Structures are given as C-alpha cells and as structure tokens.
Image (tube, rainbow, N blue to C red; front, side):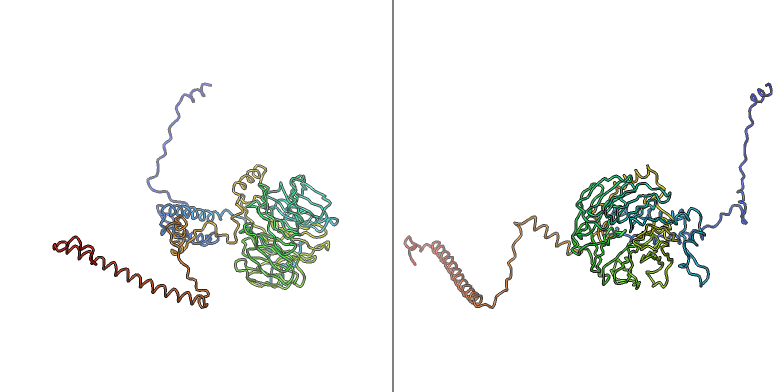
Length: 560
C-alpha cells in the first residue's frame, strides 16, 4: 500500500539516552546514593565459617619447603602445596551446593522414645515413594539368605544358601537375572559395577554377568566362605575352609597373593575403607590384619574369649566393631588397637554393619537394633528396633548406600526397612552415581581402570605414601660411607678384629709370653743393626778425610 511504502521509505529516528551525571540511588537504601553497602563484617563471618569447615577436609600439616636445599624438589613441593590449597578452598566453598540435609527420627516430649516407632508408623508419615522402600520378600525354600548392595545403592544381590541367586534393581522392583545353582552358596559380592558379580559356591568362586551367564571359574580359590572386593585396586579377596586368603586382580585375572593364616577355617572378613587392609576374624577370638605385600599378619588383636562372629569398620576407618560367642560387642580404635566401649548383649550377635552416617545395626535372633552415638559414650537404649514379621532368624544386615534403608537377610527371605538418617544425603557423581546412564557407566569403568591403584601401595599407615623420609645427618653420612666402600673395595683397609674369646686359656697365655720374648729379641737385633750402620758410615767419613790429607796409601785399604 502507499502508506506502507511511505513508512518504509522514512528513516527511523535515532534514540539517544543521556546518562545521569549523579549516581542513581538503589531502591531500599537509606543512605546517600554514592555510598556502597558495607560487607566487611559479613565477609569476616563468612571467612571464619569457611576456615572452620576447612578442618574437616584438611589432610595434615603444611610442608615447610623453604628450608629444602634441592631447588627442583622445593619448586615441586611449592606447586603441590598450591594445588592442595586450591582444592581445599574449592571443596570447602562448594559445600554450599550440597542442599540436601540428612534426616533423623525425633521424639516429642520426654516420655516418647524413638525406638518405639514401628515401620507402620514411619510408612504413614513419609511420602509414597519412600513408603515403597519398605517391603518383604517371602523366600522360605532357599534360605538362609545373604545380600550385597552396589556401591551406588541402586542394585541388590541376593543369595540363598541352597543355591538361589537373584540380581535386581530394587528401586524399580525389577529382577535382572535369577539363578538356581543346585549347590551351596556362602556369599556374594558385586565387582566394579552391576554387570559382574562373584559367587562363593561350595568348591570354588564363580563370576557371572548381569544376565546370569557364567564368565569365569576360579578353581584356585577353593572352598570359599566369604568374599570381598576392593574397588580402587580391582582386587577380589576370598577366604574359606582352608584358611587361605586369596587376592586376585579382576582387571588382568592374575593372582596377586595367597596367604596362609594358619588359624583354621575363617568365616569373617571385612576390609578397611580408608587403607584397604583386610580384617579376618578367627575361631580363637583374634582379629588379624592382612596386606597383599606381606605373608604374615600386620597386627593381631585378641578381641573375644570365644570365636569372632562378625566385624565391621566405620566409613572413616577409625573404629572397628566386633562380636563374639562370649556375648560381647566391642568398639575398638583402629589407631591404638584399644577397646573404647564394651556392651554385654546377653544374646549372641550374628551380624553388625555401619552406615554412611555412623549408625550401627545389630542383628540377633529375630530382632534388629540400630544404635546411635554409641562410641564416645555408652548408650543406654537403641535408636530404632525392628522385629521380623515372619519370625525368621537374622543372618545378615546391610545398609544401602545413599538411602535411609536397611536390608535384613534372614532364613525366610529378605526384608527392607527405613532408618532415617542412615544414608549420605549428598553424593559425589564421580565416586558413585545412583542415576548413572549406560554411557556414564562405560566411561566410568574406563576411568577407574586408568586410575587403578597398585596392590603394592596397600599399607597399614595410609599417610606413608607421598611423604618425604627425613633421616638424621649421621645416618645419611653412614649410608654414604657404606656406598663408597662398596664401590671402592681396593681402597678400603680391613680392620683387624679384636678377638677376646678364650684369652685366659693356658695356650693363649704361653703364646702371649712367647710373643713378648720375640718382641724383645727383635728390638735387640734392630738396635745392633742400627749401631753397625752408624759405625760403617763413620768409617767411610774417616777414610775420606785421610785421603784429603795425603797420608792415605794404596795398602791402607786393607787395614782393619
């Protein structure tokens, strides 16, 4: 239209905005417009809070590299300290992103107790998704059962002693595979992820994939009772009827070590999460600590007067809980190997397990108790209790990682209950991701294989690796002297040994007297020889003097 063409032909006016000469006042501010808000006080409070939280992630004192003589080492230590400081600042400041808070069970008033709450009461109070985590599996034909959760808490592995093995995604109530082996099964464990798991059968250890197909038959690990997997070292450990502790690398299939405990059959085994040291409980009441680098136990602890029934280690590796046939439950300090608390249970405790937040589950008969704040002080009553509805006997209890769920394996099946405050609320996806996809699982497996820790680094002192050995100057000089003498054997003089053994014998006395006589005669002969040489020299001097005077004839040479 003509009007549209005229509008297109006309040029649009330029809009110019004049900036204000004076600063604009901020809405809500009471002071003048140019005055900035004071954040110095808030910043000091924030920095004080950050410095307080840093102590939780700190790993020892700072290394004083300013006094190091080696320039290259000093620069390397400066760089490492800078990286450590930067990582410490980041992990402390990123804590504000951890929005989830762990829950707990609280009672109202002084008369109400938390251990009186039943699972029915908890199920009515929580949401539908959380209530679905309370269930019972009735499997009376193949019990008693044992169980194992994956590290991310998503998959569950059940094994009945009469040969029933089931792998399931318990969060979605879906069974992935099911086996009927028609053979005695003692224990099961996951390997690096849910695609592979190991089964301790009657005669040997078998490895299956997630579809139930047999992959490997480990005949060297014969008659196993317990299995354990070290995720950072890719080591499958087993111990059984013969009392031999086996270490096998699952990435290469090679046997790393075979240690004979010489303490008979062993049915109790657990590893320390902080340093990967294996703890074995024996029938004589002792707990031994093992490493693949030594064929003898690193330490021995006499824990009970009867056989050790079960043991477990806290997440930070500082506390060990043991139970025995003597009806005692003891808490030990793993750094000093001394008991911290001792409880008289009255009944024999069959199984114990630590949660990620430090709760302890105790199973005996048909009852399960959960204890809280029991290490530093002696607790008088449990945090929660649960009785099996089907009246079965408890065989094993396991907390599910990153969930407030406790799995109970008994002789009539499996039960799952809710324990508020048991699981870690904030998870690290690089460590264990409950929501990982297939591609993330595949990439994570490759990354873990590249970062696999060698078995040689498993030591009792977890801070020994990476530290600088500082020796005294005398020791350093002695080592240098020994090294020089080894490289220059011709230049070294052998030191005569001062043999004093048998010095008062008759033969030794006679030889010493004879030695004194020989020494005195030698001195006499030496004196005569020196006098003769002196006389000869004086005679020659006289002959020269007479020759110079002229009274020396041709026949004077024959004069005496």
